[in-house]
Amino acid sequence: MSDNAVEIRDLVKTFGGGRSLFGRKASEIHAVRSISLDLGRGETLGIVGESGSGKSTLARMLVGLERPTAGTMVIDGKPWADLAASGSRAFGRAIQYVFQDPVASLNPRKTIGDILDVPLRLLCNYDRARRQARKRELVDAVQMPADTLDRYPHEFSGGQAQRIAIARALAAEARILVLDEPVSALDVSVQAQVLLLLQQLRDDLGLSYLFISHDLAVVESISDRVAVMYLGEVVESGPAAQLFADPQHDYTRSLIVSAPRLTAPDSAL
Image 1 (spheres, rainbow, N blue to C red):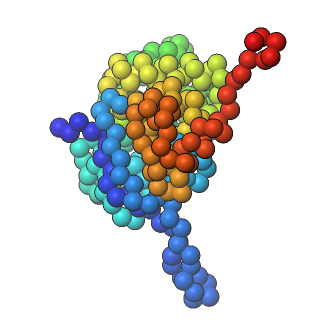
Image 2: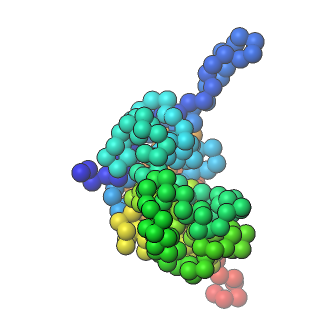
Image 3: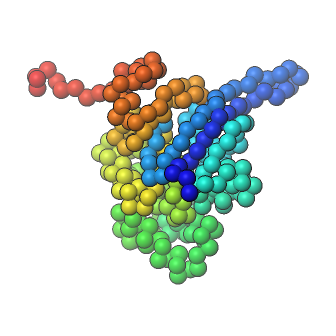
């Protein structure tokens, strides 16, 4: 088995380029330009960059929501093309997506128990008794009370809803999670709690994370390595501590300089 949970080589994604209504060739947009990256097993790889840099397009390709224009991906030892040929369930067993808006990602008409039941039934083929036991294990793993299963998404805060969304991602027993701005909609104090939970789950379950965010402080706190994207390309990557202490690319330096930082008031100095 490879030491890498994900291997990406020369990945390209373009949009457009066909013919317009008037027969002219439409412009082609390069959302991702020849990216090569590895995500190690048990590792958190942070992906940073401003809006439009290609972060979410990369994430959507990884989980099978977009088809790459060129290049290759291997996910948990399985070529992307093989997963695509097998259908969405194959992706669901290998890799899961945690969305930015936790409340919007949960069906408001279903109880949390029903929401968690779907991947356990469709992806894991568990019988009813095993599903019930597994659902209790999942809410316990994300540190939510047992009565969570009988309640509806609107009854929870944003931080609680994100814990439930993480539980749903874990239900399929995938060992790779794509976390797309998973704490950006949360208050700062709640962000810290969810980040700590993610770190505990990664260590306890041997998970691998692709963690996408525009918040450099969050990425620095949780990532082992960081890749910086600009206009669809990875312009710099390396160990998180090294990259933030000594950025080599001008764009990385500009991101770090422009990031908001807390400073003590003059009276406290």
